[in-house]
Structures are given as structure tokens and as C-alpha cells.
Image (tube, rainbow, N blue to C red):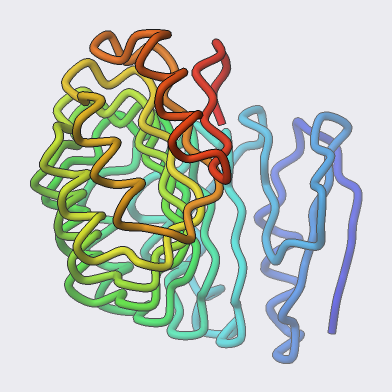
Length: 255
């Protein structure tokens, strides 16, 4: 059963969720606010940081068919909320800008959600390499990963993702400033399904590593290298000439 509802941005939606718990067949639920305009039907969309939360005790035990959860920009969401919503059926999770979430939530996700396909963690400032290592070890089906502006993430976690999540299609590690050429080497060796890569604002990435990556992954369609200080406009031009089938963008925007 699919349900779409419009709620006030300032209301406490926990009682509503508790009521919907009685719908054991519920697998797609969209909660919209006047500030939230989701592009598609998402299972649990609470994307507004003015919403008020209490822990979802009792909810996760009833929603055993949860497959997609969006909590993007919900700045009050904590590890506890993520743990309660972690179900074996979960395949898509967006907790971007949930700045209280830590590696504890990722450890629980890795244990309970082995079928995870999409994981968006952008701007989660407490996420580290350790959390990504947990995901890499148990979520081998991961295809889409966003860790942009996760400043504590670097080669240690991202290389594990590359090595163990071999079906990865999209990686956004913009402004993971500890990432180096070693990440591109790992992607070149293991991520043959990669289609999109954002390495913007990473000052330790070099043109040589990008050339090696593009030579190795023939399926790559788009590469964003905004504000990579070692990548000059001349090197970008050379890459575009050598790899005309890849959309290489160094303009000042973030994917």
C-alpha cells in the first residue's frame, strides 16, 4: 500500500507514524510539508528540519517492508532514529545533512541492512572512515554512495568501498579532503561499473591519477573535478580531448 500525506512543517508527526504502524502492508509513504517537494515517491520523507521528533519506539517492528527512507535535512535525527528504522528490506536511505548521525548508525545499518543499494550521507560531519568500513564489509550491493563534505572521510574508508562494493555506479566524495590518488587507483582496479564520480574540492587528487582512472573504467560517463587545486584548466582540456565520451566538468557547482 502506498500513502501520500501533507503535514504542517511544525507538527509532531510521531503520533501519525504510530497510527500508520497498524498498516502492516505499508511499504511506500510520503510525508510532504510546504517546504518539501520530493521528486518521487519515497517511503518515509521527513525532509524538513523544523519537524519535531521522538524516538520511533515500536514503529520499526511493524514496518518490516520499509525499503526507502528519506530524512534529508532533518537535523534532529540521531543514531537512535536510524537504528529503529533499520530493516532488512531497506535498500535506499538518505540522511544527508543529519548532522548528529555518527558511525554508530552506520554500524547498525551494516548489520541489519545487507541489501542497501543507495546511501546518502552528505554533510554528516561525524561520519568517519570507520563507519564506511562497516558498510563496505556487509553491504556489497551498494551502488550509489554520497559522502560529500564528510570531512572525516578519506582513503581508508573510500578504498574499502571501492574494493568490496564492486557494483558501485555513483560516488560523490566531494570535499573529502583526506582522499588521495590512492582512491582513484582502488576505483580503477575494482569499480568497473562506475558511471558517475564527483571528486571536487579534493586538493590531493592529480591529473595522472584521473588519466589512469579514465583509461581503466570505460563505462564512466561523468566526472566532476571542481576546485581540485592540482588539476589545471590545461589538464582538463587534455583529458577532454583524450576521453571525449566522458563528461568532465570543472565548473563551480557540486553534483
